[in-house]
Image (cartoon, rainbow, N blue to C red):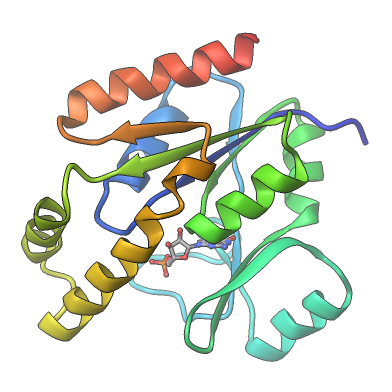
Length: 189
Ligand code: 5GP
């Protein structure tokens, strides 16, 4: 199958990446969301085949052996996440370009596999202290988890230069406008 375009969003957690991805999907643009596979359990109202393809660790490993993944990572210990090659076929064959919300290592892998076809966007929090205060306000993590996420964020920030575009999410409305413009320019290029 001929390849279409790929738009990758990666960021440390708490950067506002998912909000920006949702905003893009609400626009009248030919974009489809790449549903990742994961070995973690569904949370809250998450549904299989909508939020993720929820697989057991064994099923996930079978797919790794069958070379079904474009990329996969053990993002957290014993918890795997990955993009199935079949997602690209599913979206491209329906005339859509593929939008990804994945971790920084996965983002870099996709950019390396499809260098010309990919726009890789890194969403950066204004500062580590701002990120810390957002994670606290969000209230979904305990103190230990917040410390863990901050340590991970410091490492993740080092990947920013490998992305095509670095969006500093200081003001959300401004970031939303900027992201729509960058994606439109890329789709029209
Ligand atoms: P969560 O469990 O909070 O939904 O996601 C945890 C992390 O896994 C996030 O940083 C998310 O971007 C990342 N992630 C989700 N899907 C994929 C994927 O297909 N590949 C990779 N490499 N990371 C993913």
